[in-house]
Image 1 (tube, rainbow, N blue to C red):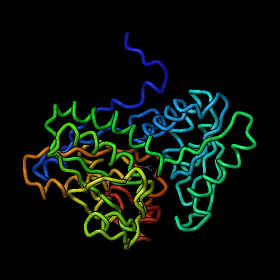
Image 2: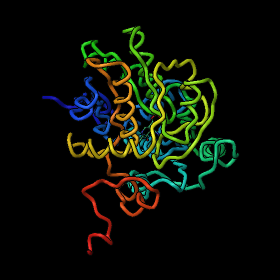
Image 3: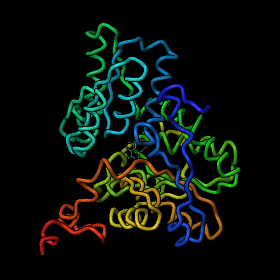
Amino acid sequence: MDIKDGMVAAIGNTPLIRLRRASEISGCEIYGKAEFLNPGGSVKDRAALAIILDAEERGLLEPGGVIVEGTAGNTGIGLALVADARGYRTVIVMPDTQTKEKRELLTICGADLRLVPALPYRDPNNYVKYSGRLAEELAKSEPHGAIWANQFDNVANRTGHYRTTGPEIYAQTDGTIDGFICAVGTGGTLAGTAMALREKKPGVKIGLADPMGAALYNYYANGELKSEGSSITEGIGQGRITANLEGLEVDFPYQIPDAEALEVLYDLVRYDGLALGLSTGINVAGAIRMAREMGPGHRIVTILCDTSAKYHSKMFDVAMLREKGLPPAPWLKDAGEAAE
Ligand code: PMP
């Protein structure tokens, strides 16, 4: 018998997949950690579980209690499902710019979804700050209390990756890993995994794959939190040093334009049989750049964050991509062309 005791036990221990195309074109071995196979469909199940377990350990959550969070979607989905499985409720605050697929999924997961306008972090009504205030209010009125998950500045997030993602990758590569790279939303995945890998293997190199419009590339490359351009990616792109990122050192920072990430994303479908979301395109594009800079023969690991399913109306919408001057998947045609 091989039975997991509930969905929570099925989070993590994901396979590490050799990416054939990325390995071939870079001369390195590039591996992707298949986080899209988590029960909630993304890497964020790990952060959701870690945050809830931490709150339980600290006596902050009682049965029927409410977990409030501001999220681009995936953390909300993870929190809602773990909350369902452990007897809590969720109130999820999400910017209204995120795909409709995420909204639908959050509603299906039983979250009380509050859509808010997308505003910069400095605005008091930014979704993260809004969710913090809402949690404070609900803590006063909810009969079983309410907590704010606060994934950006709650270091239980990176501790979850330090305890699970990092050690799993080290064991799966038999300690032969040379580099790890991924994008940053909260920084939990990058910082927590890097902490664990560096502890086990001090020479391991850490890379950052930043989308355009985020400020971290400039910060790690030349010490200045500065952003330029924009990106259609969701769930990544940070403008400040979150508590989860504090103390992180980055050896190889890269800034990846959407067009480059989309080409890599389409290659993942065509050559590897993996239909994934665009943050994964950023990650694998970053891994390819890092492989080329480190030279042939190295082993580099990145994260396959989630599947394409939550983004079909965006990253795989030919008309929308054309409008933005971005390359659609070559085998897809927009409605106009199909009729010709
Ligand atoms: N990719 C996707 C699709 C995400 O939703 C997120 C988190 N919002 C990330 C990557 C980044 O993960 P982290 O928050 O650990 O930096």
